[in-house]
Structures are given as structure tokens and as C-alpha cells.
Image 1 (cartoon, rainbow, N blue to C red):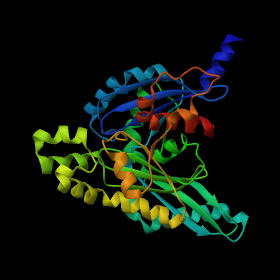
Image 2 (image 1 turned 90 degrees about the vertical axis):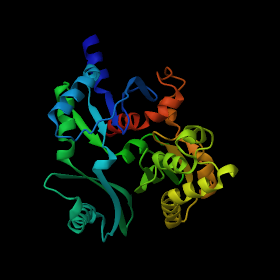
Image 3 (image 1 turned 90 degrees about the horizontal axis):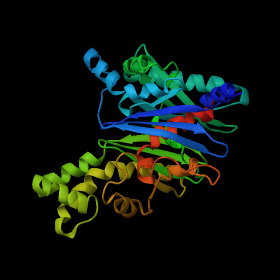
Length: 340
């Protein structure tokens, strides 16, 4: 009896892993009676280039990630590093319900032919149908090179994992968001920001904009000098500072690709959107104020806990602030478990 209970419990668990520019995070998630439960989580404050061909670096990664071998008997799903992916969404016409499969395959093939720069012999294409009616079907396509993740997968296999898969960032974050209203989710990283557009729990659009925390730090350093950079960043960040109006003007100019893209995505749908912030730099000083001023909407932080907290289960072993930083890893595990 206890043996079969143990096996059942293991089959309802997954390990989500995210490799970002400054750390590796993992979260073990299980299916509870009324909600998902966070079993364990961990962090390595190191940055890797997981697609490197350097054997010495790969061996170091295996050694550093040895703690993950404790979870080798459960599925591992890794968030695809965004530097390895290309994501787009397209809409094609339909004549009948029976043409759905042909329409999807045709759209994917056409996109690959028209964008050969993204294609190699080992390109993997992931796609999801995000909207469908009698006349049209909209598909989101994510392309990545299998060879770029081969070394990373080999690391996990050498740690004892037999079930290893990859998922795009937008799928992992979408799995955590329960609001059905039109939403722009901004995942702020060091070098870029991902914009994920959702309505009714379905992905409507995706874009990656080259603006991140690094750009804010650079503008501050250029204006006030290295000595004052940390102080000004901590106190003001992206907020308007009457003492350094030139600095704010430079930050606004640097961030305009992000603002323009977000506004364009909202205009296309002609719907009011909620603005939700997540990512490694969701706590970038002044970010909330800046977005509220530029987008004329008060942003909120992604409430990751809504997928995990319930009166019927124990509190998760992770506080609210860390939960936001672990969102991609948590979402990857949730997305895996919901799809199985």
C-alpha cells in the first residue's frame, strides 16, 4: 500500500529549472488536493552559458548542479534561455474546421521558409493555437536549435534525469496567471524585457525588447558618475528626479522601444489592459512609477501565490519576494503537470 502511494506521489511531481544571466533556480512542485504545492526550491548564484562546447565548463556545471540529482526520479522541465529562442505569432484563414491541422502545418512551414536565418538542420519548432474561430486561426511559434540545448540536456542526464524537456518563458509565466482580463506581462531582465500579451488565459502576443536593468544603470553612470551610481540607482532608479532631469530624459529615451511596443500591442486589440510585472528585476527602483506614467496604468506584481496558496494546504516554503524571482521555474513545473 505504501509503495503504490509513493509511486503515485512521485508521478505527480515535476522539477522546474531556470537558467538566467546571474543564477540558476529550481523548484519542485507537486499536485495537491486543491492547488499546487511547492515542495522545495534552491538557487545557485552563478551564471552559465549552457550551450557551450567547452568540456571543462560542462564538467564544472555537472559538479555545481550535483544537488539536483536528489530529484532525478521526477521529470525535469527547463525554461528555454531566451537568447536561444525566436518567437512569433501569425494568423491564417480557415475554410472549415477540418482544415485546422493543415492550416497550422502550412503556417509553420511558410514561416520557416520566409525566415531561413533562424533555421538550421536541428531547429525545433514548438507551436500553440491561441485563438480559433470559423474564419481564422492564430498560432504562436517558438523556434530553437536543439544543438544549443544538447549540452544542457546532457548535463541533466549525467545527473541521473531520464525525463528532460524544455519550455518557452511565455508558457511558464502564462501557467501562473489566473486573471482572464486582457493583460500585458512584462518580464524584466538585465539585458531585455519580454512582453507577454494574454486574454482569457490565452497567449495573444509576444515580443522581446532590448531594454533592461543594465540600461538604467548605464544611463545613471554616464550622468552622475561611477561614485554616485549605486546611491542614485537605489534611491531613484527610473523615477523622475528633479535634481537630474537630464538623467530621467535619457532613461525615457532608452526605454521608448519598450513603451512603444507595449502601446502598439494594446492598440492592436483595442482593449484596456492590466500591466503585470515579473522577472529578475521586477523590483527595479522606480519601475512601477515609470510604467504608470508612460502607459497611464498602475502596474502590479505577478501574484505567483494564487496557484499555490489554499486554506486546505500548508504554506509554501518560499516567501512572496522570492516566489516572484522563482516564477519561471515554478511556472515551468506547473505547465508540465497541467499538460500531463
